Length: 295
Image (cartoon, rainbow, N blue to C red; front, side):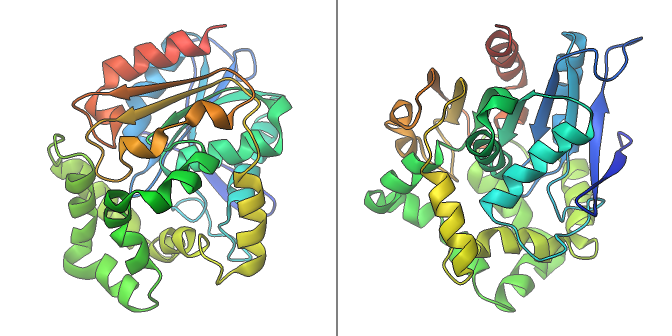
């Protein structure tokens, strides 16, 4: 496995993978953060990190808070504001003033949050498999197919049952979600084993479920500040990529994405692909990302 590095952010251990061009020091190249989602980890993005490094970028892929070896949230908070702050704090901790962000799934949500909190510190944003948050909230109630796709979010709200269901049969639910969300992507036994080990690490399963539990008003203060942040318009250039066959978030949820932005926003739906675009269409994604990141 690719080695990870650690630093402290707001008193909490944060871990990340890093790729630098040969003979290049950190801080001398444009910084790009690549944030994974659920149920995934930064190692899935090593090919993208290498592509970015070869193109002259300083590529860094953090673990989401609570995903070992990153420490869980000290206050138990996993709302949108905290996820955005994590990325902004990482930029500062790495000694950079600004960065571009590529985020997938919850990583895309964190990227949107960071751009809403501090747009002057984000150069460009690439969101994979998640539309702008205000558009998601607007389109969700009228899309019955999407409500069915999101069954697992309801399951994850149930204390005790959710934990047992996630851990059952050695985390078999992880493979099920990967199959449902990316039907054309074969299950890789090595990747599956690595993810099972990750979620079996102390605190990781609880943290992963906490992300979803902060989506509902049971955490009223977190819910209110997340909702306010989600409705802020994008003010940084964005590229939003969706898979036509995504079994997690269907393409209809992306309709009207440009209306959520006051900066140029490009939405592209990739036919024949599902949720995990970085593994289903790596060459296509890498080419699109490099073309978009270059001014």
